[in-house]
Image 1 (cartoon, rainbow, N blue to C red):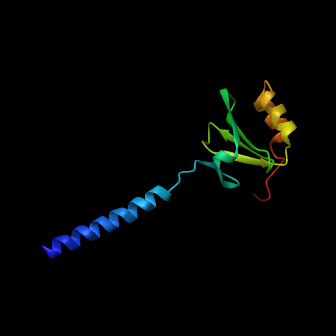
Image 2: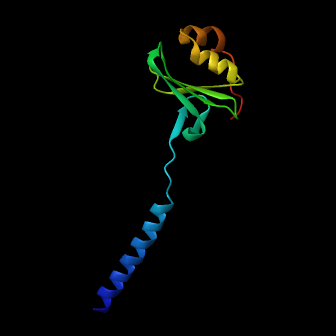
Image 3: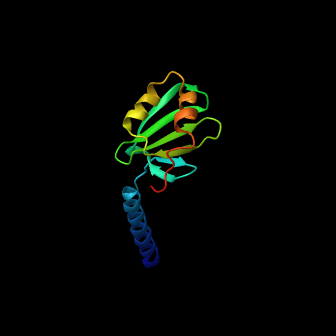
Length: 115
C-alpha cells in the first residue's frame, strides 16, 4: 500500500509540474525568411496579395525596423529587405503591377546587413 501511495504522489507531482510548464508555454507565430532568419510574426503588419501578383503572395512590414518581408509563392519562403521606408512600401502595396515594381525598384537593392 505504501508503494502505491508513493507512486501516486510521484505521478501527481510530475503531472502538476508538467501542467505548470504547459501553462508557461507560449506559441508565437514565426515569419521565416531565407536571407535574414526568423522573426516574430506579431511584430509585423502583413497584407495578403489576392490574387497573387506574379510570385508575390504576401507583404509584411515592420515599421520600427524598416524591414519588409516578401512571401513568395514559388519558393514558399520569405525574403527581407531593409531601409525601404514606409512611403515606398505603401507605393509598392498600391501598385497595380507589383512584380514589375519589385523588379525595377526593390530587387537587388535594400539588402539587410543585420536584423
